[in-house]
Structures are given as structure tokens and as C-alpha cells.
Length: 268
Image 1 (cartoon, rainbow, N blue to C red):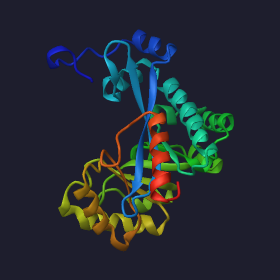
Image 2 (tube, rainbow, N blue to C red):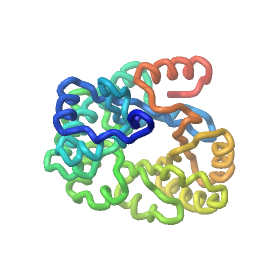
Image 3 (cartoon, rainbow, N blue to C red):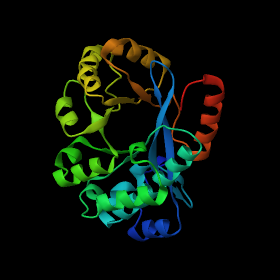
Image 4 (cartoon, rainbow, N blue to C red):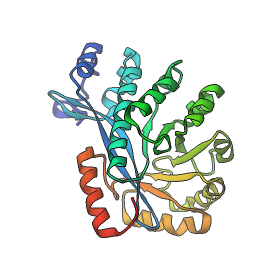
């Protein structure tokens, strides 16, 4: 929850609270699954930051990320998340799974002089294959990324993603030119049936460049069926949303994977 008694919005956390939360290990990563819309096969996970507050329960980022940013703690928490997601990704790889794990990177973290070194360190410490890690950026952050930083990330072998693509608005060709391997359609961009042509037009050039496309916010079977029909021959499309599962602990993903591998026969 993110509201206080009687629905009142609680005061944002203090810097001291956030520092204590970091010291006590109260931050958590949950993982939201992604599925191929057409085939129904498991396609990957995105790691999402949460705070296990001692009195308010599990908090989403809206309750604390802004204060993390102004307090200067967003970067160290981001590096903790990077180390954690690579360790968890490596655990899944060790069990024989081959799906990618994605982590959103804040603009302030991407601008850090040591950012690429931290990515390399996390990959080395966890022994995660670089191609199994997707670093997702807002479009503006990726476009503003120093060429040297982007080049070094690509040289490491990690995949770059953008998480706010707007069909019919975003210059997808320019994104592909920047080395983007994963394009996530903005949450809500797939809700309007009248925008089917824009979606197909957006997918076709991305598919031609080998870019993996993920639709965020797929909440019901009707939306999934419509997306499947609209995609047609334009390319594959993956879905993320409560139709496929909400953010959940790694142990819950483990159970999902075990059940899926037993009953689906699909590669993971």
C-alpha cells in the first residue's frame, strides 16, 4: 500500500529512513514475467524495485523513488539492484533456463562515470552471460547517453532496451540505430483498439531489425487476442501485465517455471 490512515497520502520518507532501509536490507526485487503473445511461451522477466517497510508493508516505487533521487541514494540502490538481478539471473541460468532478465536504469545512474565498470563487475561476480541481461532506459535517457558509454555497454554484450515506446510517435528506426535490442511499448499504448495500424506500423521496422518488442500493461485475454491479430506478419510480440502475472518474488517465478516446463513443453 502507499496510502496512510483514511486514505491520506503519507509523508515521503526521510533520507535517514532510506539510509536505514538500505543498511537493513529492506529493499527487494520482484520479478514480473513476460510471455510471447502468440505462442504463449515464457519469454523473460523484468526486475522491479520494492521497499519492505517495517510498518507500512511492501511499497511500490511511487512511494520512495523521488526521495531516493533527491537524497543521492538512488545510485547506490541501483547498483545493489544490478548486483542482485545478475545473481538471480545466474541462478536461473544454472538451472538450465535461458530467458533474459531486465532491469530499469535511472538517468542519474546511467550518467555515473563508473556505471559501465559496475555493470562489468556485476556480470563478472555473478558469472551471468552478458546477453542474458537487458538494461532498460527511458528513451530520453538512452538518447542522451554518451556514445562512449553506449559503445562500452554494447561491447560488454549486454542488451539495451527502451521502456516507453509510443507507436506512431517514437522514432523506432533511430532507436534501432542506437543498438536497442528490446523495445517496450508504453503502458497504455496498447489499450486503444483504434491504434492497431500504428502498432503494426511500429512493429514491422523493429522486427526487420531483430528488435524484441514487449507490450506493457496487457491485463486481459481480449487485449492479448487483439494484439495477436494486429501483429499479424509484422513480427513477434511479447506481453507483460497482470494477464501473465504481477510482480512476484524469485521463489514464485521458480514455481511458475517448474509448472510451465512440465505442462507446456515450451523452451525456457
